[in-house]
Length: 539
Ligand code: C2O
Ligand code: CU
Image: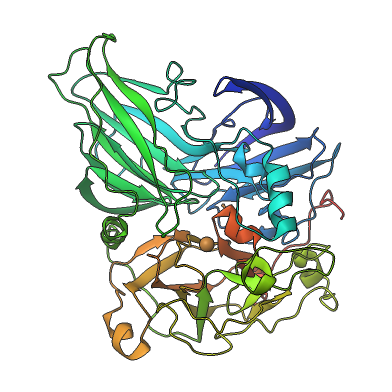
């Protein structure tokens, strides 16, 4: 492969959305951020220079960073943040990846405007498992906030209450149709009749799943999280924050000058309504004739999690895969809402007078003051983290029944799981109905995993394990479960480093719905984590 270099200057840029000018944090003044394009095997060298007042890191979401954990870009996990005026060079390989991924800030809520596509094309002479499309188009779904999201986050964490919500959803950075103040600058996709386009969908939103569809057109799903899938047709796809999906769009022969709405409709995959407004762009054949009415696709209901659950069950690996039958370590994680102790000098708005929290096995993740990976690498974990993250919840309850009243305060600690190199791991992620059942798109750094099972209600190891799909499960980096449901994932810990696993809803991860795996070096030289780069920022 060759080496591709990019410069990411983090700077403020004034942009106009929803009839208001706002100064936002951008890469190179662009919003959404610049696209990185590579061919599988290329080395990427990306220099990030921070010109803003905030601390920054950039994460290459979905890149496994095999033996390059230092480049993962997770603040306080693999690196200290890049402070104002500093720079850091991310240097990593794209070997083993093809497809649509994205990059985003991985600190506080800066990813609201700091995100962009990361596209890895197959190696020369390696075809797609479908005819070469006529055009390829990235479609980034996101959120627009009129307020300052850094301030909102600080406010939420201080009051310990519920989140504020965005003012609009966006397609390629544009709020588009649904809002009088953005109708005119809706995203437009110009197409020619009778062609096939590859749409590369990325959900970069902070806190919302989406239904996505185009009026009068069927989509063929071909890839999810940069792994090819068995192809299937659908009018509406479901995509959670942190997920990517490639679909083929076949344009018709008989629509000269017609336009159709491209709709992203928020779907809470839970039972609480947030910002329920859809956003829309326009699929435009030929020359626009403004007199034609715009057709809208038929979308599932806001709360239609049966549709969403069904959709997720259709995702399968393209070919048969070998999922390790042997599991060395079993974990059962309850994830849901919960509560942390309220600091003495605050009044909090959560249950029991505490702070709203997002515990995993009743532990909420406390970010350390220094990078975990450095502490691990230099054998200085003492006082930074412990390796006793609970393998099971502290007590059993009817996880998905009526919200239990006997919930207890979750602790806030930096507890990790330590794994020997090569450990085969199964994690069942069990959603709970504490407070209310909600969605949790769980993302794992450093690995792709197989989604071997999913279901509603409480996971039952005796009944559910024999039903696992070890033949053609989907392989991805972010998986969602229905509210009041569970998913089972498997991966082999063959990548040394410290790897975050967390809910990709920013509000949940800010509430501590995170944990991390320490994967030790293997015996062989090529199973060891190399030393840190010399320019690694200091805390
Ligand atoms: Cu998309 Cu931990 O990140
Ligand atoms: Cu969550």
